[in-house]
Amino acid sequence: MGTEDYKKLVRLYIPEPDFVQGEICALSEGQAHYLRNVMRKSAGDKLRVFNGRDGDWLAELEEINKNKAFIKLDHQILEQKSSPDIWVLASPVKKEAFDLMIEKSCELGAAKFIPVVCEHTVVHKINQERLQAISIEAAEQSERNDVMTVEPLIDLKKYLNSFSSERNLIFCIERMDAPNLVETMRKLAKKPLAILTGPEGGFSDSEIDFVKKMQYVYSVSLGPRILRSETALISALSGVQLLS
Image 1 (cartoon, rainbow, N blue to C red):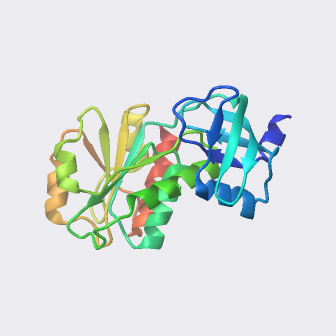
Image 2: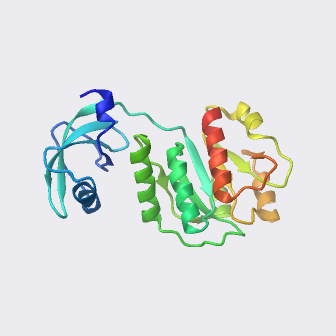
Image 3: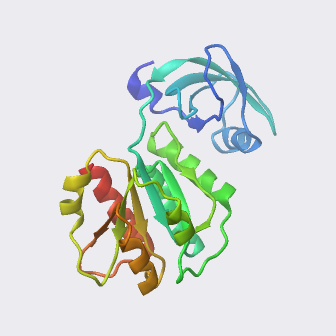
């Protein structure tokens, strides 16, 4: 089976600590339903699987019924490739827009997503398990072989008070003079980074003062327009990924 043939196979994330040739792995009930009822797969069919550490593997569907499915690991077909060491700090927004932010952050290679509560945040609860599932599905579809971690919701200032100065923070602000992203990334290429974007309504004056006083922070402008929260994040993350 050639590389192009492998790409046609269904690809699933299997949270096994290590992949071993010949090992039998149980799939989740949701994965069993997806393979049986959506993809119409049956015993003997081939799949691609990954666990975020051992690259992509070829596997065979050993058994499948209404609620259960088991696969047998065959061999590695792609080596592990780690994503750039980029974190996202972003305020929760309305459901559809925040789902999009999680999905696109994973597709664009972010290693970690930290939802933060700001003074103007309007959404104060998240379903972390559901958002992690969105990240996993995005990794499966986008061909990345690791998965972005979605962290619990936390207050912005509380999180930044414990933030490591070894990681530089790109602070995306609006309606203020700041260097553009290209200029800033010339200084920060290949360094551990985090991107901070604001909620609907933007950052408060006190938050801007608080963040800008930190030594490891680089304020940047994303251009002359006022962007929606999800647009700002996608724009910033796309630029950082390209320039880093």
